[in-house]
Amino acid sequence: MLSETECQHLLTALVDPVRHAGDKIMEIHARGVVARKKPDGSPVSEADEAAEAILLQALADLAPDIPVISEENADSHSLAPSDEFFLVDPLDGTREFLRPDGNGAFTVNIGLIQHGAPVMGIVFAPALDRLFHGVVGLGASEHSGGRSRKLEVRPVPLRGAVAMASRSHRDDQTNDWLAANGITETLATGSSLKFGLLAAGEADVYPRFGPTMEWDTAAGEAVLRASGGMVICPDGTPFIYGKPEYRNGAFIACAGFRMP
Image (cartoon, rainbow, N blue to C red; front, top):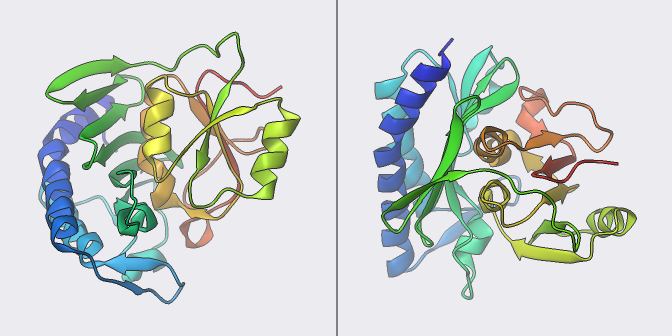
């Protein structure tokens, strides 16, 4: 099991491969993207697969003894979860990536799980040049435009909490939860970028009731936890990883916001 210090060293070593994956994604995006549907109906493109190849090779080189569950490696989805494993989403927000009016809300993600909880994560939005990373217990940082800053969740503003909402997947349950908690101001964006914005103090809570997979959330949750936030189930119980088929249920990602 990697220690906090070892996680930090690994995270530092992964920054360049993650940026390389992001550069490859943008290169493919610039020349035009052709997507096809996977058996579950979700889209996949050359960019997903090219980025995944870069990330899997980096993890094989840097941490060969830790299993990797990756979105585009279907064989890995049948692996039983161990006490320590990686969750990789090489291109989260493929629908945003494919939008002609895309706002850059797609990300490259690596998360490390220990005993069912994310402890290290890196989230990179290449179109926005925003890279978020953190190790739980050691803190989180953002690197953007050649500058670095420490990340800490903010207290909920006096005017009320601001919620992140999915641009592509907002539903009636989300709207009902927002109304029940008196939240009227929302920011809409895609992918795990929502977790980064919570960690960066740009919003306060992200309720999600629609389907997601563990590789969609692991890296972002690690960054959020490292910055002082948390992710829980709507009933307040812990949000655990290593579930059947690596499939998530509903969750509430909290920055400064706390459930009543």
